[in-house]
Length: 128
Image (tube, rainbow, N blue to C red; front, side, top):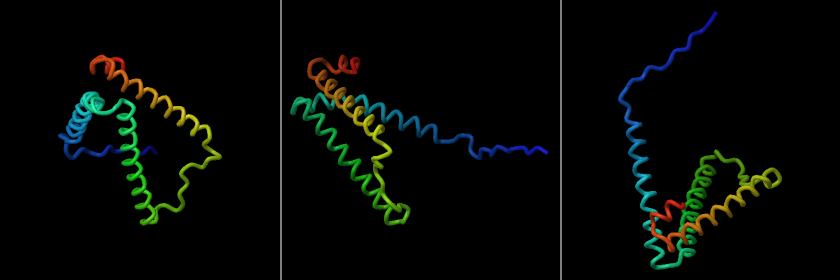
């Protein structure tokens, strides 16, 4: 005896999700294109290292706040039994790789920001 699988029928063939995804992708691409210009404007006021530091601490504060609120929400609802952020005995290798990734990423960003000072935006983006 064989059983046949039935595929679910599409109720709306003109689904709007691909259009929403294309719109979101377009917005993100425009924002990524504006970033070097905003960095260059920022470097007119403060140094490249200060610009990078401000960019990193602001994103860390926002993501840390989001993560804290997420953990608090799970704790209140009872979904979170115990919090083990980094079981250190099992993830030394992973933490080492993450640290190495962070060092190389920060180095790349420092060189990119300094190249924006030394060259024009288009050449810095090509090098980036």
